[in-house]
Image: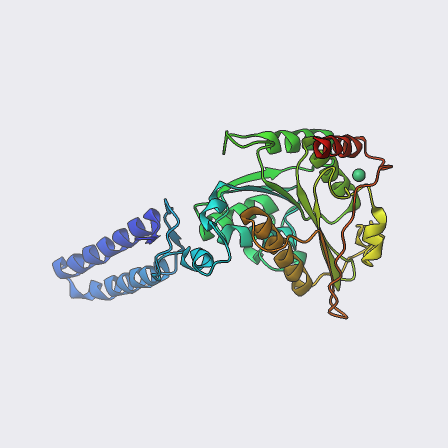
Length: 347
Ligand SMILES: [Zn+2]
């Protein structure tokens, strides 16, 4: 049985049933029938509570192996069908992968939900912000989560959707010295898959809304030789982009600032004090979808992984391009990676 009611809900239902039985026998044992009216009133209140208990959340238990069996109770049948269709060679490998998502806002939260529903092995979530009513024009967060940290609210929702995914929540600001140190050490941690080469994660997704945080992710990934993907939505909410960054092989975020300018999102994507950026669930959803599609292609090795894909919703224009690293890049770690990469090619 995959779906089960929580233990607490079961106990509550049993308790309410016992109360009804007790009231029943109490009514029968009373010598004075004039007291029956108040017992009937109590009985109807307990019945009402029993009805409410039926709406309590339902949780599914963990699934040991991903099955391709086509039954309504299998949460992975439609994903495993990708193998049967010849799109993916081995879908179940997704359970070995760890993805870090920096920024759990309009794009990051939706990307996290998509990866959770796809059954990714482990998600590391980073954000320092809290859920606000002003976030409700976007997807994912719900009004009752207002005041919770975005990371805690995300873990609450995602663990209900798919308890198979290992979720790690980091409520911190990566642009602070201490936040950066924790960020780096969490990316290095290999306890999930000790035999993995390189860092402890397979991909970092940057879903932040400002230049400074992007430069910090860029710095961490260059230092760790970590492949990552960058995403962004313009301040006027009508365009966005995703970009693949492989240290030493493609342009890093510091190599080519004009790339951002070329997509028409330049510094308008930067969060400025006192300026209220516009946002649409549609554009954010499209960018999250493009980002996670590229992530699945990268992890499961199918199709073409886009090095850069822009989205202009006013013209329905999707520009693509490829950028080599800049030998004059201001980022020292990027230059080191470029040198290592060249050495690798000479061997
Ligand atoms: Zn660079």
